Image 1 (tube, rainbow, N blue to C red):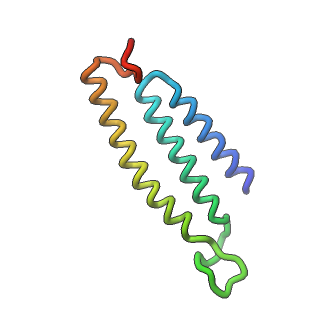
Image 2: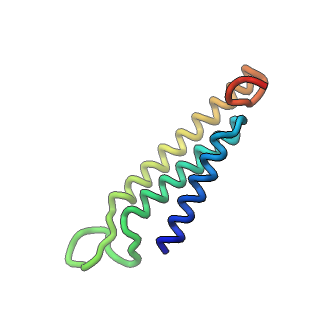
Image 3: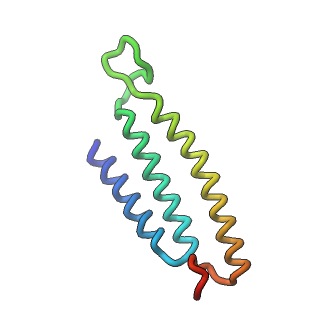
Length: 106
């Protein structure tokens, strides 16, 4: 299970970095989104992958840490707002410059 999560985090990070290095604004937006998904998955996996255990410290031998779950929920909201803001910036850049290159050149 840990290997599958590590591979998924690595693939999302690699694809996100590749798309961030592209010259088009849509690819940059997709790259930022994939990187935020990778970070969310990393934060979620850092809270111990335990199935069927309570998310509190109590009488149970093993438990799931609730803090990464709360961080991921917060990161999802922030990531959605960031994506909407970057899309609006890309649309404004397209309207002002007439192209969608990140550096403003053809």
